[in-house]
Image (cartoon, rainbow, N blue to C red; front, side):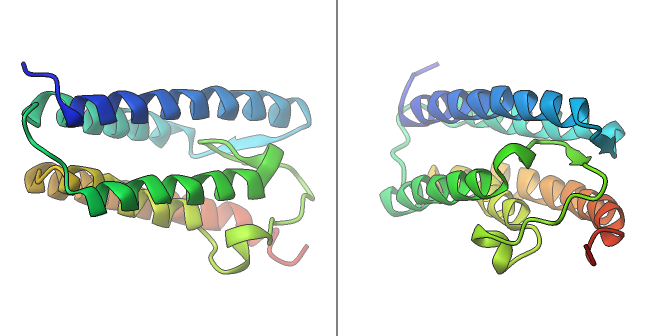
Length: 168
């Protein structure tokens, strides 16, 4: 296997995602200690599998000599700033799981002023975008569709949980 742009980008993205998971785990531990309740935990491993498989597919199936589309790669990089904005807006409430605190108000700052689920929109764009930056249409289509299916279910779970708090 030839090591090229795709492999370097995947390693960088994987490192960033691992750092996010550490941060999310800390927040999860604190939320649970404050009385937070996790919802929809059974589908969470499917997201871990999907995201891990997506990165592995890019790493192993995109040939090392493939040069990326710099505009698409730049767009993907710019979306990482939006990701930081989302995480910062949720602050101690940001996790990769659905966790609620009783009587906690909904966050309505940052991108949450405009959208209910900005992180899910971001991920729905990122998953196909990165493979497309390397011309991997098949990876983009497969993982983009699988992600949308999982997100549709997750959003239903999250909306049901948050419905009771919309009036707080």
